[in-house]
Image (cartoon, rainbow, N blue to C red; front, side):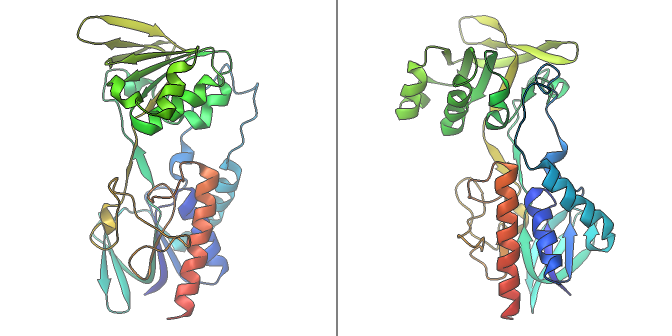
Length: 301
């Protein structure tokens, strides 16, 4: 039986693993890859050399190299279900294996809700992205589109409005703007709100998205943009522990300030939790907290 099993190896999971190993815990990381979403980068040929973006990539890569070196601490599998057993927990993987540990850290992340339209897969991360807050500063005096819903969509459009020359906000209905943030967005002179429109296709040239086709019940139009952001929310990968810990209405794992869940011995960190953790640097901090909390828990066992 391991001291600790960490599910997921994105920024939160890798950080937790390194901290736990330094505490001399017997650790196993279960993840099909190392690095998570940090392995996916937006291709920005016109902008990348002109701006410096603060991110956690260098830190994550250092942690990744340590886990790669300690290959005995990593299984390239996908955790499917966590069960309570005497003295701890058992993790069943999709590959049919079973591993046991005294404590668990869930750092399985979350996936962006896709549009599901033609052109999306072709131009993903090539003019089409899912995190405006990460890339908005790169599009000063450019034209951008945000396809969004709820607070996340409005917040992303406002973020871009501070930098871009023109922002198109495509939203299912005007009713979603009936709040303070929505009023601020409507008052922004460089924002055009297309309420009631839906995206039919992402278009581009030279293997880079340059526009999108939108339509409502009366008309169809094509918008020429430098970038399109899809902000329809995140789907947390919490199914492996959904029967064991408290989830909120978004199926995020509810954690306290020490990254402990409602189940003693199970901790969680990163985008899979209800913590505001959509950025690499934040996930790194959350992973460190989860590892230290797990260590304190194990000391008391």
